[in-house]
Length: 378
Ligand SMILES: Cc1ncc(COP(=O)(O)O)c(C=O)c1O
Ligand code: FES
Image (tube, rainbow, N blue to C red):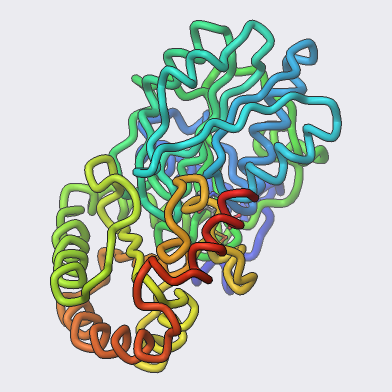
């Protein structure tokens, strides 16, 4: 992307060669994104982030079908979807929020039972950003099709980690975000299947064939294209992340008592693990690990800092002690064995130290039980 921040600052919409060469770079990037998704370049719209893609897809689906006022989603979506759905409820839409089981999995019978002739849209995530649990996307899509509903998938966490092929999929629209696959923050893309009725969310100029107004973020787009190309070539070696993740997970479970993996370990992204350390606060673990230069997260970046337990783990009905003491490790193709080894070295002592300070060491504590009841009642 560097030359497009310095030398080639032309506008891809300009008639002159200086802008035209930039237009060519945008075209190449569109091809690279399409290739990773098994889509056609004309089906890719560049956006400013995943949140914009989600908003654009949902709004477009509703505008295209004004007589249908029902939306189906899940309780464990990213705030980009959940908060928009809550907002739409205030505007008269009916939203079904599908629950998940204790492993974070969807119940397909519940999906089927929620669909009606007035369902405009089913919008569910490909993989959960906190647990990595992967939903049975194609089965849900097939059900949505039976009822004539549009199917949008927030695949921000899945793109580049699981192979995707839109040419043989039931997905009508799919969101991705650059910073989850090593492109910069502030760039994303929305896949819109050819023939899907689409009204722009960003109304303005003719850019993106009239589907998203606004002068393009050319360096971001070029970077996203390259990141998709690299991600596509890395997919064959994704076992790198899986092996390191499994090693990290097994080591933690073996070396540290009272630990659990949150979410199904079968249907899961290869790079994510969410682990509950009972009887301590996740934030305390994060701050302690930060002192060793280890970066992990509790909840999602958008809600962490609020000290509210994760809405995802809550939807899974996990006990209070796990809800509060859960953290998530996300690995990438750049993660090394040495880095994982370092985590395994420092974590047991860190957890032991925090537990020594904690007033609880088992689930029998009266206060803990009261908290658990209060949480369940919410
Ligand atoms: C599943 C999911 N959807 C949407 C987003 C939002 O993407 P962005 O931050 O690019 O708006 C994220 C970001 O973390 C995410 O994990
Ligand atoms: S949840 Fe990932 S940045 Fe908000």
